[in-house]
Length: 211
View (spheres, rainbow, N blue to C red):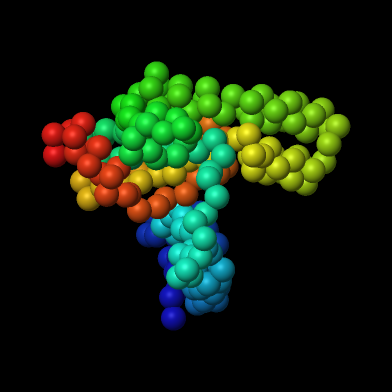
């Protein structure tokens, strides 16, 4: 049992006799019990920090014999490789010139503000302007928060908004993939997916990088 004891006064001084102080004893056991109960309560009710993660949705493999998927509207394919390099092309891949367009060629980007960020901002300028208008209406309480969220989702899913296909070779880093997705979210691009790189695309990347 924990106790605090205070000694009595008086001493051996001569003269006027002082009243002897009573010894005070405080039982600390209930206080210690309360401290442990509070500690146990906070441990059991606290939420421990969880590792941050990012959910990615992968397309389902079509069953055998299925017809080819329709062409992606406003599709942009981004190819990530070594040395923080990003290559991209717009539209469908074409191995050679045909009636629908010219042979696919790659354009290089990097992670600077004047490269990847600027390119995505220009491609999604319409959606950013429309969402900015909704933000003003939400701030002035012209629309409810639930309405704002629904309309933002509809804008991001609009057919004229770009769709980004992210593809990597075996030399790309996980950090680069996350950095690209971060830029997509910053620029309010809602349609993107990670898929396997085609051999023809890989050949173009190797030709660009000398790999």
